[in-house]
Every structure is written in structure tokens, then in C-alpha cells.
Length: 418
Image (cartoon, rainbow, N blue to C red):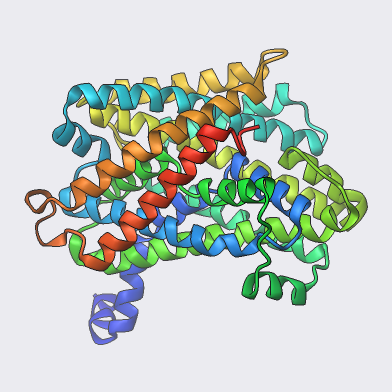
């Protein structure tokens, strides 16, 4: 009773209390953007080009913020997931083909995340035949035996652990004046390799499955329109966290690998190469960050997939539901994890080809999902007075068009896919 009275008499305290009760979906979705594939992209960019590509994080932030805000607003206003809205507005046939391709892509994505678990633990001396099955079991228990509130708390802790990259970068003793110059006055190189890397960095910001997870998590948390302003802060903090982690990954690799002329192909290579250059602690922290990001995404990816497939076809879905209440949801979640684990543990599995084709499918699907979103969010019969205003439409369509062009370029040229 005393707490309620204090909240009424202190608006700032009340707002903080409300925000803390709402925080989660934006930060978690933003943090998952830094998955094994994203970390690899940032690591390669830092090793190859030093600090010169740090400026790309600014348009990346804008793109991520624009898309996540729209997802959150649609979820709060309609109380429906993006998959539901696509089925209702574009028909079952289109929905079926979209989600069949998304399902295939997400199985490949999940395998890539477990590859990140294997690679990071290998740097720390642990075999993939031990680390991957244990990680999969932990992920399954968290989702199937837990509930939304517990899972969200653990996901938020994972997000904080990603800040280990900050310490890893500081141990590398970067040149802060060069960093400032690279951001304020970037020197763009007009050659194919450089432009391809720029497109790859910005293009990794928004993945099709992220949009479905963001909207579903807002609904599952039960956020109402009256709390929309607090959700925006959650989204903004999530986008900031994403860019901060990406910034320090690039800085870490630029200050060590690029400075010593060392090139890499994967994030685990960066973790190994850091040891003689920045010390064992920097190497271990980098590997730990890769592990956390990989297991984090290996949880969220199949969860998001199970959410949107079940939503699209009218099955019950949600972490708070029992297995008997949502058998299709939990069965699909389990099947995706098993598929990802089996692919990684198969001797001679073509992981590079799987990663390439997964990115190709994402590049094909992203424009379709973005266009569907922009059409839906501007329908007054769905969003009422919460449709996009002129500024939001301008930002939304420009972001969508830019991401569509990036995806198309990567798809046509194969840039950044190998």
C-alpha cells in the first residue's frame, strides 16, 4: 500500500517502475541481432578494413530502430502477431509459401548458431560433441519447462553478457583518435570489395525472423497502448545495445588483427588470433561473447520460428502454455533444435554452403516481409489512429527500400555470402 502511495506521489518513480515491468522485447530482439553470423561479419570487417567501416553502424541503427518500432506498435495495437496479420491480409496461399521458405532458412540459421557454440567452445578447449548437445538440452529445458517471465530474465542476462566485447576491445588498446576520425569523417573506398562489405554490414541488421519475434514477444508480455512510450524506450535501448556491441567487436579486431595484417574468415578465428596480440583474457572474453550470442540466438531463432508458423496457421503458441495446450508449438521448436544439432555434429557437414543458402533465403524473404509490414501498418481498419504518420512512412519506406536493395544486391552478386 505504501509503495502504491509513493508511486502516485512521484511520477518519475512511477514511470521507472512501469518501464522496468515492460522492458524486455526490444532489448532482447536487438541483442539477438548480434548472432554468430553478425559477429563474424563485424570481425571480418574490423580485421580487413580497421576502423574505416565504423560509420556504417549509424544507418544500421536507423534501420533497426524503424523496423522494430513498427513491429512493436502493430503488436500492441492489434494484439496479433505479424504472421496472423499477413495471413488475414494476403491470404493462406501467400502465407504458406512465405513460411515454408522462412522455416527452411531458420533451420539453417539455427545450425549456424550451434556452429558458433562449437567454435567458441573449441577456442576454450571443449569439443563440439560435448558443448553442442549440452547447449541444446539447456535451451530446450529453458523454453519447454520454463515460462515467459523466467525466460525473459535469462535472455536479458544474456544481453548484458554480450558487453564482454567492450572489455575485450579495451584490452586491445585501440586508437581512439583514429576511431573518432573514422566516424566523423569516413573515407569511403569506391571499390567492389569495400562496397560489398558495407552492404553486408548494414544488411545483417534486419533479418525476417526478428520481425516476427519482436511482435510476438510484445503480445505475450501483454503490453497495452497506454504503455507504448515505455516500449519505445525499450526498443531504443535494444538498438543502442546492438550497435555498441557491434562497435566494440569491430574495434577489437581493428586494433589487433588489422594492425598486424591478420585476415580471418570466422569469428572463432578472431578469438584465437587475439591471444598473442591482446592476451589470453581478451581472447577468452571474445570467445565467451561468441558463445553467449550463439546460444542466445539458438534459443530465440527456433522460438521465433515456432511462434510465427503456429500463428500463421492458427495453432496455440506461447512459452507460458503447457506442452499439452500447444503441442504443435513445442514440437516444432524441438524439431528445429534437433535439426540444427544433427547438422553440426554430422562429420563433413557442408556448413559454409548451409550458411550461404540460408543468407540467400533471408535475402529473398526480407523484401516480401517488409512490404507486407508497410501495407498492413498503413491500414486504418487495422491500426485505427495508430497508422504511420508522414515522417514514419518516409523513414519506413526508405528503410524498406534500402534494405530491399541491399538484399537484392547481395543475392545477385553473392557478395558477403561466402
